[in-house]
Amino acid sequence: MGNVRLRSAMNALGLSPARLGALVEVDAKTVERWITQDRIPRPKARARVAAELGKDETYFWPVLLGTDHAVNPTTSEITRIWPTRSSVPPEVWQRHLDNARERIDVLVYAAMFLTDTHRLPETLARLSNAGGRARVLLGDPTSDVLVQRGLGEGMPNVPGRAASAYEFLAASASLPGVEIRLHDTTLYASLYRFDQTLLVNVHSHGLPAKDSPVLELADVPGGHLHSYYMGAFDRVWSSARRPE
Image (tube, rainbow, N blue to C red; front, side):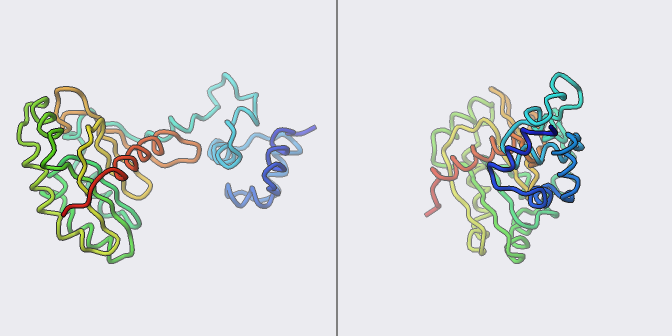
């Protein structure tokens, strides 16, 4: 009988073996073998097929249920973890900044380390010149939210640091493709997106962001975490204000 579920899902979306093969980067004959001989693709191809067809891989290959061979896309999103932001090697931040070609998104209160150590304004200028886009969300220095966050972390100058961060970056807002907004959101995580890589600095009550863990996430087909956190970014972005 072959793989009836795979064939049916493809037919429902009007996908030929050649078209699905092109989407997941294999040839049409390989897709035909998945269908007619019920061959099981390699893990990367399985994850991409599942993402394209909108089903879990175990729906198409139920033999994988309960085995170590089933790939969880969300697990594969997590490429590295650091116990604190301050333990992330400086070269990691610099490499991500230097390698970004299309997009940078930043959601923080201040993150002065990006301007003090890693020359963020220069990176934004380079990205703009290359036709890329950047969105930077900084804390609104006039917001009581920043005052309360500073008191809770034992760092009462959070509004002052946010104001300084904006002073450093204000000129960048005039660059094509670069936009800076101010927010008064209670942050549960600071977010740093560099093309398809996202660094998530999760926050813990009573501790500054530099003392909290950082996850490095890759944007993989069928994954959840990358889109989950970028959804949060977009919600903050939509409610943030442009500086006057």
